[in-house]
Amino acid sequence: MARGNTLTDRRSGATHESFLRHQNYLYLKLAVALCLVSTVAYIFFSPVPRHNGGTWLGYTLGTISAVLIVWLTALGMRKRAITPGKWSLKGWTSAHIYLGLSLVVVATLHTGFQFGLNVHTLAYVLMMIVIVSGVFGIFFYATIPQRMSDNRAEKSTAQMLEEIAALDNDLREAAQPLASENAIVVQRAIDNTKLGGGVLERLRSNHPKCATLQAMNELKARRKSGGDDLGPILSVLERKGVLLERARRHVRYRALLELWLYIHVPITFALLAALIAHIVSVFYFW
Ligand code: HEM
Ligand code: HEM
Image (tube, rainbow, N blue to C red; front, top):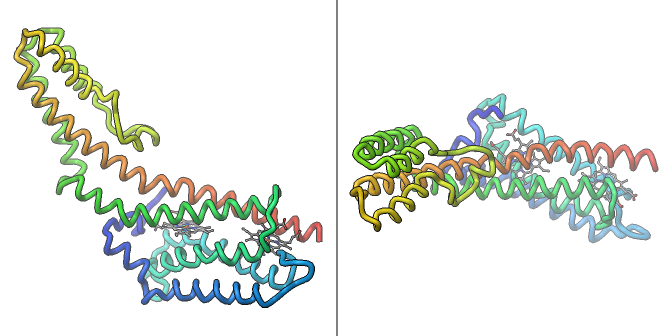
């Protein structure tokens, strides 16, 4: 997924806040006003026999919701054509978040709380999944960048990788005088260093199969039975273990920052499809 000057790239808490506070909470106010007007209309208008999507209020709230959904989807395209000025990307994202959240009220009132096993409710459920994943996205953007910079301790990703490679060289040297059964264990820790991988692998917080960890455990057990002086090699392995843990945490944070979008965006398209089916079906059966 191509990334321009997006929220994803601006990983400071301060920048994140400015999205939410944009123009003195203009879009929060607009969203609250929309919810209030919808709720008041819902309370004062009493259709017979009951509220549903087919009354004038139902149609109005449904149309507002559908227009909002199409517009929120346009954010993806908008992000790729960044222009400063009145409709800044910041304003667009702020509007996306608050007006996106207002759908919880507006679209729910549109349904008149009539849910069932049908394509209408499917559209509604998909919409809620998109919204909830959006909330997770905001939460991750708010909390992870700080944790990432604390974890990296001023080091860039490239520096971390360089240090791991340098420790591998130290391990090679320190393994030379060792007996072959011990040297093989060290070589395995060098050859099988794994960082990253598939989505699940990147999200893991513990790595019991880590070759460095396994080598450390094996050599610690052997140290008790005498033979080679394993102290120096164990200390290099330990340093590599600490660094690997830090690098893996970094990979995990990056994955979390991106993963939610793999739910948010595809489900958006499923939502659009279900919404078209919903609208076509209500007009067809009308
Ligand atoms: C132009 C936009 C829309 C129009 C014209 C529209 C139209 C309608 C109509 C006529 C009904 C009543 C159906 C009936 O009584 O059988 C209805 C119900 C419903 N609509 Fe919409 N709708 C729109 C947008 C949406 C949106 C955005 C959602 C949610 C994502 C949604 C979810 C529902 C649900 C869950 C119901 C209740 C279904 C039921 O009664 O079993 N609609 N809609
Ligand atoms: C039904 C409602 C929504 C729809 C259809 C929708 C759709 C989208 C789409 C299509 C993107 C573009 C992703 C990309 O191409 O990179 C996006 C991004 C995003 N959405 Fe939503 N969204 C909705 C609601 C929300 C809500 C309620 C929130 C937050 C509470 C939210 C937060 C975000 C964020 C933070 C981004 C990423 C912006 C960036 O990386 O610059 N969305 N959304």
